[in-house]
Structure formats: structure tokens, C-alpha cells
Image (tube, rainbow, N blue to C red; front, side, top):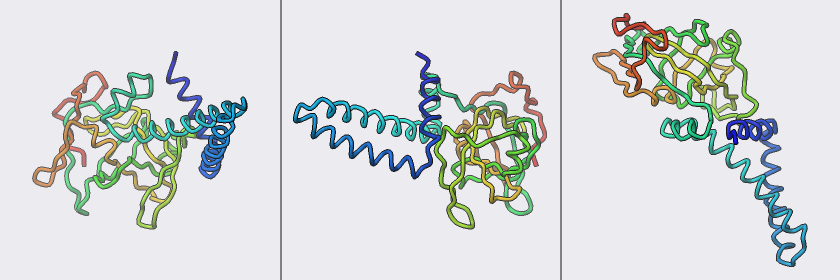
Length: 232
């Protein structure tokens, strides 16, 4: 059985339901499950049917949420790829990013081949793509994923998620990376911890941010060698 196809179909069906509708369905399933259990105890056939159906609905919603949250944790990457779900990988060679005069680490990258400037933010959970960069790179909000809550300077907002097929900067390449499309961050793009935590290590030495992937595969993914100049 192709578990990825099954998951994609389940996710597409559930993800097409607005969150408010998803909550109503979950509550309705709980009520029907309670009613079905009561009827089943009286040996009334529809009771078992209602109980089983409500359990399947709740399990489907739970599986979707758990798998989406698991994609944010690199410790689950191997397990998820083993069951046929898309893998997020970060490969390449060491990359050094100099500290900018404004006190931040900025780098020039390519999102699906489209040039874009990114702020490296260790306080951001997810990589964030601006609306303009997403449009230029052909990124669309996924309907098979639940939206996530994002904290910004203007408060907490609900944003959609997307999948970046290829993100390159310096000697690093990320494939299949989850990200959010944030319409209110202007032209700023952000590299968050869901990418940084998939590195073998990242550290700061004398004001320089050093990024080291787990898999040094520069030649295989078409990256420059270790002598590449630092990204600025």
C-alpha cells in the first residue's frame, strides 16, 4: 500500500475544511461517538456503526495534526521518509555569514531559482517567505495542511504553509522544506529553526555565523566547493 498516497488523499480532504468546520466536525464526532456507545450497549446495530465512524473521523484529524507537527521536528525526518512521506533535507558544505552593520545576519539565496534576500532568525520556528517572493518563486499555500499561528511585531496572525522545493545559499541546499507564506512581513524573508535545526551545527565565531550541514554533498547537488566566499 502506498501510504503517501493515502495520507495525501486524507490530508487533502481534511485540509479543505476550514478550521471552524474542522472543530464542528470533531465535536460532532465526539457527540455521535457518545450516542453510538450508548446505543451499542443496548445492542442496537446503528450504535456500533456510529461509534466506529466517529472514531475514524477523530483518528483522521489527529493523524493529520500530528504528522504536520512532526514535520517541524528533524528527529522525525527518517521515520517519516520510511513511511513514504516527503523528506526535508539540508545538504552541502560549510557556509559563513558575516554580521551586517545592522546587527543581523543576512544572506542572498535562491528560492526555486528565484533570487531572494533572507534574514537568519534563530528565534523563528519556521522559515517564512514574503508574499512577493512566494509569487515569484511559484509557491502556493497548501490546501492539505492546517494553517499555523505566527507571532509578528503586529501581533499573532494565521498564515498558510507551503513547501519549498529548493532553497540555496552559499554552499547549502535545502530540499522539500516547509515554510509559511507571510503576507505582512514586507519584502523580508526569514530562515527559521526548522532549517537551522537540520544542520549538523550552527555557531557564531567572532561575529561570523557558521552553518555546517550534516551531509557534505557539494558536488552532488551542484554547489560550490569549500573555498566559496562567505555570504554577505
